[in-house]
Image (cartoon, rainbow, N blue to C red):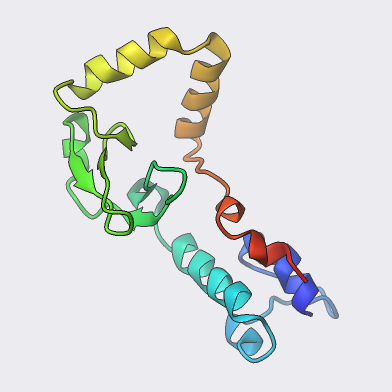
Length: 146
């Protein structure tokens, strides 16, 4: 059961490996799953209940902390200097990159688009359109361990 849940935890809703017609309850796994796997499953379940428009992540690869945008969505056109409460680094909540001091978001985004290859621009556009984020297993590789 531990290996089954560990390999399926990214799906959030995990089918019972015996009957396949029902889902496992996260609380039922509390006593049998390693703490790290149980905590990851609970975290992903919580994140799944939040609308995509309100989710964002710290842009620093060594942090990638999950955060919720509870601000005014109309203000997204403006640069928003934000400090990650997990790593204490500043980033632009509009551009989702390290804080670009002295440069407006529109200018920053156009400069970077000019530098990126065409395929990178297309991939970034698709990722933004589909609300894609970095894989949580980059930080939580333990979920795949036995």
